[in-house]
Image (cartoon, rainbow, N blue to C red; front, side, top):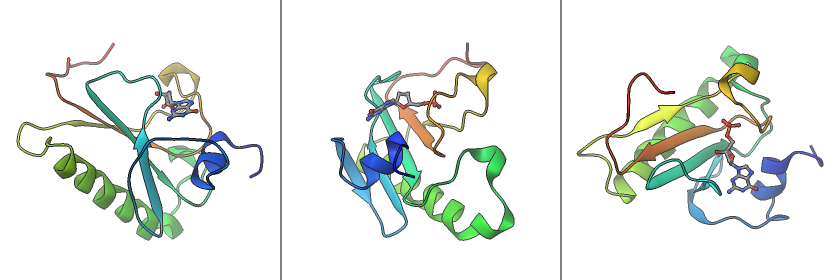
Length: 114
Ligand code: DGP
């Protein structure tokens, strides 16, 4: 996907601030953080969004959650907790059509979110 923003970040064609990565996933800091810690976990392969996930993506999804756990640990969030978010579609505010898991923490999160 040459025109996909996050595919280009994964490929290193566009800059990002890395947190960690695996063969399957990449975690980098959100350019517009909504919390003191705000990291995006993406699959290296292009998946449009959570509505496009199928059972064939099971291993990729599991690795995304494992990466999120590692991000939380590395960022000191594991004890107090954090929020994991997938936005889907316009009402959610989804703006980048490449699956991404928001890992947000470092402050108390309001619920329900705005
Ligand atoms: P969403 O609303 O769920 O589609 O979230 C997309 C997030 O991606 C949003 O919080 C801002 C972030 N973002 C958009 N463009 C870039 C970029 O070029 N670099 C980085 N690091 N983050 C970006």
